[in-house]
Length: 320
Image (cartoon, rainbow, N blue to C red; front, side, top):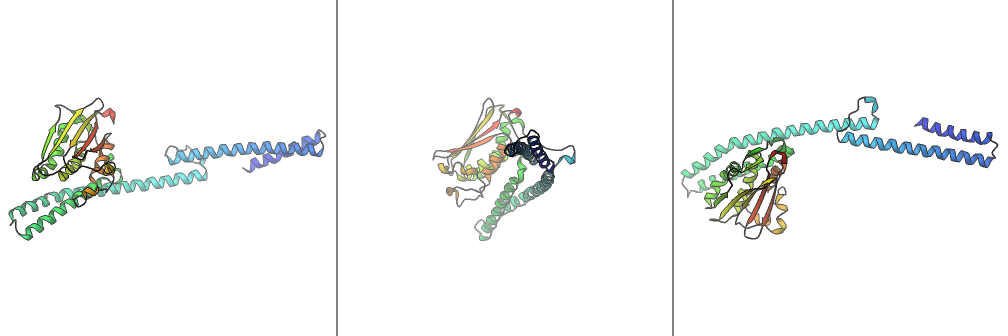
């Protein structure tokens, strides 16, 4: 930078010297001097503008992780500081991701290990005096504990992008997916005398991760059973298209208000009509996260006579 300023001074002096050599009067010499200085300043401004633009481009590349100099001396002080900060943030982010992943695995293991003891306790209460206040209290508290464990497990799955990191989609039978999800809600459906009807074409296949996608469908079916009246029906239909497989889950429950259709996917959001029923508002959020991460999507509709949730899954791996 000092060299550039010196060049400006030398150019101005050279211009003044030329003016004097050719016998220009003082006013003309000053004009030549001013023009020379302006030209030098313009050149300086253009150089500085180009330098700043290049610096901004390099810093943006550093922040996006797309710049790695071959020689350390190529970096300016600002660029070195930006690279150090990005390296520190990357290390901290990776440490947090590992911590969240370990915590999620721990919570899932705890929830899995407590599932059998809780089921055993509930079975034992059936053998006790049904009219006893102690039996009723024991069953209520056990159900509450099971609900809290399930909610905690779902919440842990939503943290720190763990879903996308654990998905392994592959082409497989849709009937196995729907069967796995339905199996999880059969007990609750039987308790309310709800019939679940399925219509699945033979040999229908789609690309999905069986365990995670079954969890996504379970969350929809769980809500359908929870909010449907006793003795009603829930229908599950599937159909193949060129690029995707469509699964519709329709119930005859209370339905979803029109102004709530977009908000049901929000984290911890619960519609006013759902107040008082068990839940923390995480199930449908988790459903959307799972399906989006594997290249699918989900939407909801309601006409006042129930709700219809439509799931779209990629037909093959290339659509992911």
